[in-house]
Image: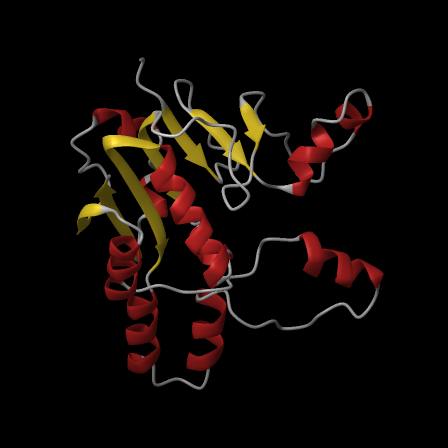
Length: 207
């Protein structure tokens, strides 16, 4: 069986040689025949090699079929129970010995920066950098729709200890904190972007 590499929550980063999934509602609209060609919310359209897929609900992949899986700044947008289902599915798709790498904001780093910030704006900066809270909200149908189908808010934050434990609980092994470009499997160099690792928590583990 050929090596298969999967990225979920890819956004506009969709390298050739990877199977790239995203759960954006905008992508679903863009993929509607005829009408989708006339619609986009973003300055550009999703690359043609991006498929719609939701890791929480499950991706159209066979169990034990992936050599590598990657996600960057996705798990923090999921509620805790959703993140658990995402990790369960991720482990299911990996082959024995396959590698999973992930990047999320580092709650500990953000908290330390907050504690060391003595300015009156410290709390504001923490809330903004952590993607928590809101400066305002729309109290109308549009606001309700954004809350219902949107996925931009951070719903659960992680530090190294918490992420290590939840990965262990889901059955991953050889869990370690990693950094940009240190993957032994060179294929990950095609999908990782250095700025996504800055001041963030990156982890690598295996099945």
